[in-house]
Length: 306
Image (cartoon, rainbow, N blue to C red; front, side, top):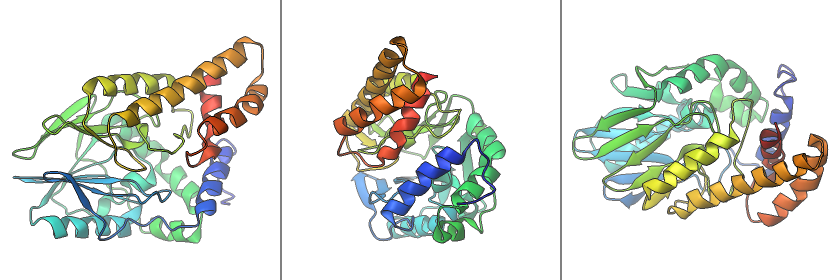
């Protein structure tokens, strides 16, 4: 473990390191696994490998939008190679669902003419936290440290506060930021014509959702999921896990509401945080026994207790 990690984030480091070591897989974006989920809409699947996101590729008449990069320039180069297999159109846009290394710290590999679009909150979070989170991730394994060693921050050249639209010529795309949830700067991407939602880590499939630091907001996370459900997407691409439908959103909301309600019950009965953790963690793990990375249950309890 990296000794330079501050005491404030040490418990998070312990959880992440346990998750990564348990799986014992290097977080590499897969080559040759890209699949078309709708006409001109593609996903490079994460293969359920920790610290690999589902990556979106949207091919429009006037260019390509890529959603997330993978961890470091090596993974981003794999993403760009996958784009070349699909189309000769230029990569006109890159957007990132949040600032964590496996989602956005490969931006430097994209062509110089690529327009990079983030929510303003995500840019601020990246500027404030990137050095610390890279140091933290470096402690997970030599392989991860190697992926991150060449990283150079490339900031967005376009930012927005709540909503932005990207027109690829024939495919309208909405970029949306509805406040903090998994991170302060969470973004998700909606294609209204195809009714496809790329949820980032606000929506994951059979993974316990992560509340990694003080900026995570379980209450607002639930509200965001309620708003997503009203959009009624036909296809949902989670940040991690298999592509599905709107039921993924509902399952995530129901999980967070269950944790919130049980924590509130324990707290109203006079239980201290440690007692709530001890009492609820086994119960929650048992209820969602087929979900991966149960080490994150305790952090969800803590978030709703405060």
